[in-house]
Length: 424
Image (cartoon, rainbow, N blue to C red):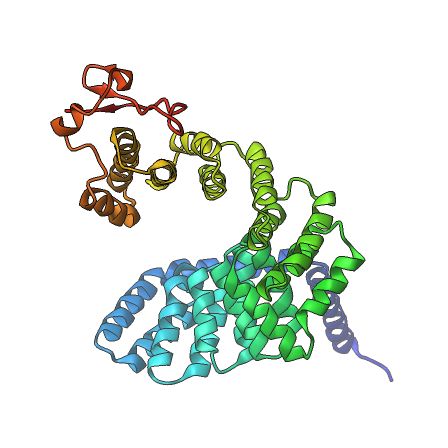
């Protein structure tokens, strides 16, 4: 086929245009994904800036409709904000409020969608995640997903961990529930709810938890968690003697573990081995010298054993340490009360001086906020076991006098007490 001059001209122009077009396409295709994304982002930003005031007006309208409980019109305004491209400026509270309106219209799927969209822009928003869980109450997997995100974002929050653990139980995911509950026990070893929940999970699996704890312990006696779990379960079933064997063995590998030592001391107490219990607590106290509660516990044990000097020594240490909540003073008062009761045959001034020491400690304990000893105060007053004033003053001997109107107890059972009482 032959072309005339015009045909050749047209063909040449078409060829040139085609080359230019293909060239442009090639150049465009060579742009990187980052460059293309930047172009799109620039377009969105430009659109957003141009529509910002309109979006602000629409958000204000939506809020007014929300106040009037006109949920549909509020949603319509929120949708217009989306269409105007202002999402990034108003993501919070746009999606949260939109979800609320959908929920009030009983459109739970749409409410859930709005929250999911909001989380794209703010994936760590706790309130939005909690709403996601709430709006998906009927969807177990979605609910678990939401609480999983929350627990991941807020590690160590046992309240959130329990929410997730309960959902695992309801979905039959017992192993995941147990793992989570064991993490709670690592944070709070005395958490009874976690312990009972673990037992329930094992029972739901058809496994006796004590058998599993025993197996874990035998496989790895160096793991303090295994030793504690097994011993705690034994204690809960009243098998203190086996618990003692387990705890003594576990402590060989974990000498400074307080939870193991504390449970061992309690197990000794429950088997009447007070000397071993107090020795264990004393070892703990050496490693925790500022622990007021430990000192009070040791004092109480020595008091029950009738070793009043040792009891008073530890009570004095406890009184000198914070927190000053009246517990240490109450314990020291109990020590003085026990000393007086152990030595009183026929009530005399020496007995009353020691009773009065207990009385002063009890009253000071109440002043520090411990009201549990009020009955002891009433008992001492009602039975006139305290120093009543001048009538007791005249009963004092020269040996009792420690200063002007100041007296100390004397005689067998009291001579080692250095504390004095002033009689007004």
